[in-house]
View 1 (tube, helix red, strand yellow):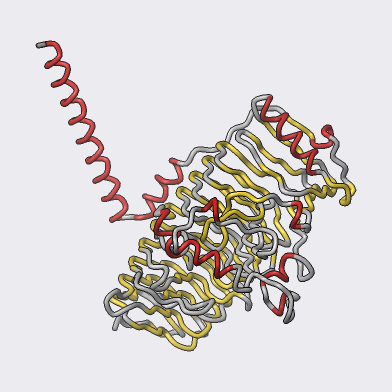
View 2: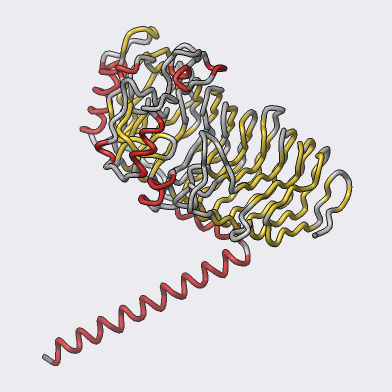
Length: 477
């Protein structure tokens, strides 16, 4: 009895010590983030594990692949991946040449590696894509498989300097968008038909189980290109991606992912370059984005679906990237209901007459969400059409977007930013009277050729520190 009491007392003491250490560690981290968020970023970078693969190679040609750009290689990819897994993992090699295929489903411990002149051409026949658990514009559903898909996998990669070609254009996937610029004409079915997008959104609002949200044939909701769903420890490195049906790189509910040296060149509808969603510990570095929509768009679910999942996207790091065409360089939203925090953007170049904004945060009272702690430094901006920083709680597209979920947006910092052609406004920010946009800092920012310094509505505590606009120092007001 005495021994048991002693063991119990010892256990209490041990747990007490651990609790004190954890609290102490948390306080230390909090102090670091409060005093210098960039030190916090460095800690996040160091904490992210990297992929590792056995030194084994499985050449798809050894499994029947034919590099003529016409023969379907879906089975050859499946066989090579299966053999790789059965032998403990390694590299599935795509040699130089053009390989037509349906969707590629990756497994744990598999590195899909493309040689420099290898090109994977993905089928444009929707019937080649099975129905899987995926997501569309921030809402989960059963829909066409992404072109490359991994679900519940660990230690998985796509590498090499070859090309992923979705072959999308205005005669196939893009026409489903309902956009006249993408081949659509009156009388052609599209995602905008009432039984399609609207039905999905309504199902999510009614909390219909995802297994019953079955779309696919006849619903015209385009597949994502590369999607890692509920994965951990992922690498995408050096590849080029072109001609995407829809969103391009889409990690969803995925932690510890590094996207390095990737080139995205795709100007179709909703062709966001990279959309981390409900994802944490994400590094996007040394990449080039030339897109038909946002270059990088950080997501966190749409409306009721996002609130039910309730996983914020956080610890998102963007470094040494180049943004060319796009609606925004680095964007947060609009599918943002679970919230976003700890976003770090540094050492990037943004420049194009077709780039609308450099940094953009977009939400509304249907989305809600808390967006906070966004830190930007060392940005070189050539030309933007509209503004350098845009923050809005009134993002409105696809009809009425008002509800009872007032967003929170706070703590945004831009430091050491130079802009040659700033568009209409240096800063455009608008919040609600009961929920103003809070704490915007522009420090050591120089903006040339901009129409106005700011357009502000319900903004609390905006601070210009050594900021020059049109050759004049901006005073706080």
